[in-house]
Length: 226
Image (tube, rainbow, N blue to C red; front, top):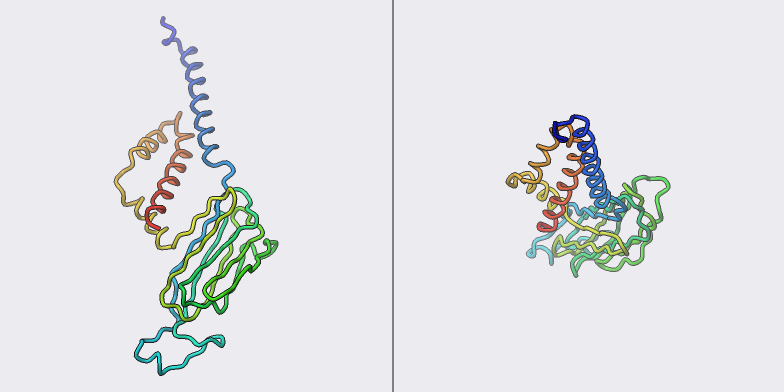
């Protein structure tokens, strides 16, 4: 009987190969998921609360919060820690169009109790600079701001922090990225992993690989759309 026909030898070799594959998969997934410092900002659609046509703008006088207003806009943002590591002293710099003036804003945190301090560094015309003292994984900051005299719904959010991946995108872009992944032709990598998942020996580590691949596809689609 040849050695490869011996059930005991085959079982030992299979166990060794399986352990090696599992270890390699674990190392790959650990490298992809360990110590991720990442902050996301989702910008929801702006709401125009009040606008005037040019023909009546000169005849109609409207004030909002003591400011002469030709338009009033409401902006809604969400900043959250999407990684697995705490991030400290995180800046959030908001810029509206050149004619806009921010007349007020409100903050809500999740969790509501024990959240790090949020400091206002600057509030001038269409510019608002904030600093978040601490964002633990899963922590969220909801921000609503009202501005007057905007000529457009332009809003830009800048976040730059040491050794932190910062992403800012609109909710529409995120939805389009998800739909783009679902509508694309079948990914051969995902097909292979799905087939492997159905095999008892390999199925245990195929699913984490699928999660990593889907996350990479989503990030790539998001970069292309935003």
